[in-house]
Image (cartoon, rainbow, N blue to C red):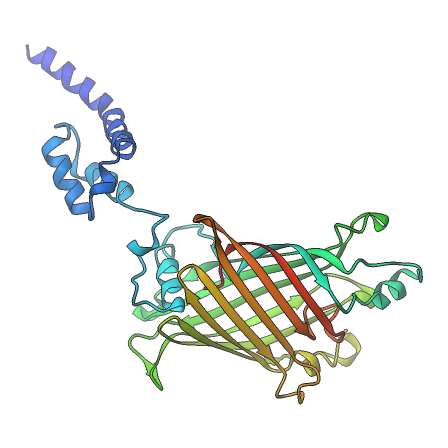
Length: 350
């Protein structure tokens, strides 16, 4: 009898992972977990109804998994949180996960971006020695922007180090005569140290994050098409209610005159930019301005962005972006652009 009991016990141990997995699947499928508002309620339910072979560790894992609602930001973000604070809370849930990639700036695609001014063909004609080149006024533009934590909670403080990469491409997809080339791609790797203040207010606005970092921006070209520069930048956000104010000043790192592809770039980009962003339900309205006051409104830029929900679908938003001024891309940094685009946004800036 003792031998038979031992054999049955070993069989139960062997089946234990499969039993636990079945419980996990059953909880997820029949919807019981969705009715638990906290993991504690789920654990109490499993204590009363689960198998004797299930350990407390497995119960905690099952309940932490099934009670999480990745499509329900309200589980993380409170209604009283501002747009930047809400974004930081979502990021915080991913900070300690190894090999984590998170969205940085907004990720989007503009299926039709039309420049009323017309793109400048001069740099390409010079580079390729062809005067007959033509560029369509309409093109596809898209941006991919990611970041990953390198260190978190430094010195037991609210200090983190991040690395990020942003690529923005300008694709002449409708230009069949020229084999639909990529007109320009800007690469922007960066690294920064950020502080997440606790309960700091300035003029009635909550200061949610401050940062200092290094940024390299290049179009990856050579010869007469080459454009690049390096910057030390700061970042600070203030918010009240659904309004966020973001200030991003920078200082260009000087280069040797012989190696500088664009010595006058700060005449057009200036030394910083200001963002205003307002969220209402799932709509986000953003306004960016840079170098207008500094240049006497002669070489500045303004961007207006609107992202909006699409039929309640949680993973995509409609996106309209209007840009007027200088510095839309590195190849056009000293050319005036007046462009509007419409498409889809995959992750919002806030």
